[in-house]
Image (cartoon, rainbow, N blue to C red; front, side):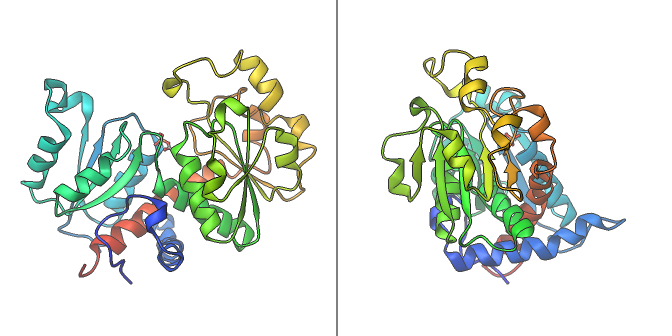
Length: 307
Ligand code: CP
């Protein structure tokens, strides 16, 4: 199996069939990470550059591990240790990276659309590891994998996404992805954090989190992204937790087999109570484990055969 595309830039450009191929491939490749020797020769001789302009723990590490488990050679660059600090532009950086003939460039950038620009400039496959507030397609795919693994399906489920929707690239990728795969998405949070017109992506909106929690098969809690907020969007973290946080008390109104998800990093005690994040319904660390499998699948499908 291969994907007949050069780049992975956003969920909207993946068809239902392509998403199914990616999920199925990830489910097959996941077993490699449980072996005593966690390595196969599939991408031997391929070179992958991980280019992170923004901080990352999960995405960066799991891409590196995924590439290494497939035997690819990897190089990591961060903004602070590259010539970007000397003023080099993204375009010049891309042209110089391309001159070294990599097979794939994984990029995270604070500007929406940066991976799309890079993809137009280079022959290598470009994978978007998060661009500004726009898209985080590999997070959306690993979230879908986790739901499918736990629930056996995606179509027909009710997915509640709670929190700072306005600043979340994860929310955008998940609204588009889950809706495309036949789930119903409900967004919940304070009005200041839910963008006007977001219903156009196919989601319903409520400002009462209890309403979203009540019928949800999956509750995905999003981080309050203080670093992207230009103004105070809520009075205090304590009040946010009281009015909109996923607490043990609010969990009493949830379904008995609900899944609790969070893309990380977590603001403990703000958008989610620690006992809920670590409770019996939480699959947060399983999301992280599936991140390796999804990124292995994408690298394999993009680089493992003739394009
Ligand atoms: N979920 C996610 O993108 O986490 P990182 O910012 O740590 O990569």
